[in-house]
Amino acid sequence: MTNKKKMDSRVSLEDLILTSNRVGAVIESVRGTMLAPDARKRPPTFTTNQVAAICGLEKSQMDYRIKKAELPVGNMEGSARRRFSLEDTRIWAQTERSKFMRPKDAEAITIAVANFKGGVTKTTTAVTLAQGLSLRGHKVLVIDTDPQGSMTTLFGLLPDVDVTDEQTILSLCYGTELSIDYAITPTYWSGIDIVPANLALYSAEFALPSRQKSEANFEFWNVLNHGIDTARTNYDVIILDTSPSLSYLTINALLASDGLIMPLPPSTLDFTSSGQFWNLFNDLAANLVTNRGKSKSFDFVDVLLARVDANDASSSVVREWITAGYANMVLPVEIPKTALTASASAEFGTVYDTDPATINARTYRRAFDAYERVVELVEEQILTAWKRQIGEQHGS
Image (tube, rainbow, N blue to C red; front, side):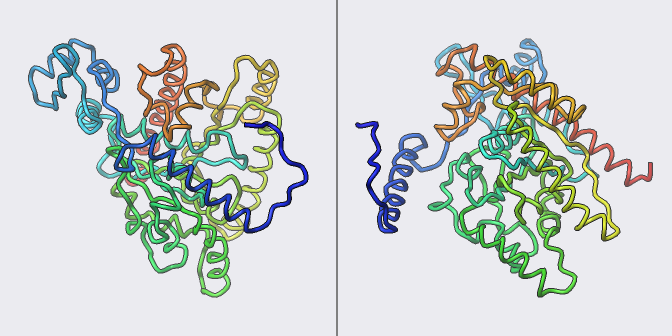
């Protein structure tokens, strides 16, 4: 293979079509290698120690409960190792962590993961958060509002092959559906359902402003907010992945959310871009909400330091800028830039999909522990938001 690019070759539209076909064929081939033979991903299994850690149990407590057989006992591998399915693990979590589950009178907390910049681990953050919360027993709905469908791909669905327009939020945007329920699809991961995306979602950028002009009292920014009303009673957490732009769909996601998470690498360009994001969002919020005599607040806004390179001396300076600018919004945890996150992404997965036995133990623990801490911190904020909901219902 030559590393030289021909500088005098012109590219026609027909060439681009051929290239697109080749890329599609390669992607399909890669998926055939990386994913299960049935073209769907397989959920991980868990050891006794892992289930005990998720549930906050000592090994002896776990062994005692297994002997009582009141909860799933898993399957023995050989004569010494017991493994639990994802579904069984979630049953354990829901039982042993019952005080952390959604109260009867509370609704799902909706979280948007957003950033203007691409490549900041936005989709990876959204998916790992969904998986981590699911492992803790919560029922999660993820909604992909990015036409590129990166979240959809991480759940093992190819947007241009496996997803029809009717499975996306497009019908909601056109007004032919009023509730998102029609588009909810199960995933390979027990406890997580998805509303997938494909390139057809780009047409929502024309449909929503068109309806705004032609329909009396229509509010394009509240389409998703109203569309997930039923889902709020059927799920514990709803996670929205957004495109790297302040599009009509991203505006919908932000204004439908109770919490916002912005993954932010400690680099100068990413930091300055984040400032532009908030300036634009604040201007839009003023026009769409405040100036119309309404209000909007978030239960929490988190800035997550992501893709942190321990060997990059300049990043420490940018960290100080980020902390000075965002103050207590910055989560007290950093997601390291590791070989694990890169390899997991290449295999359509996350740290939760990765078999620890396939990678250096120290590298695995660095990434896994960081994401676990993020999930823990977000869950704490979700619990606080639920308490606030119940307090407001009772007038306290």
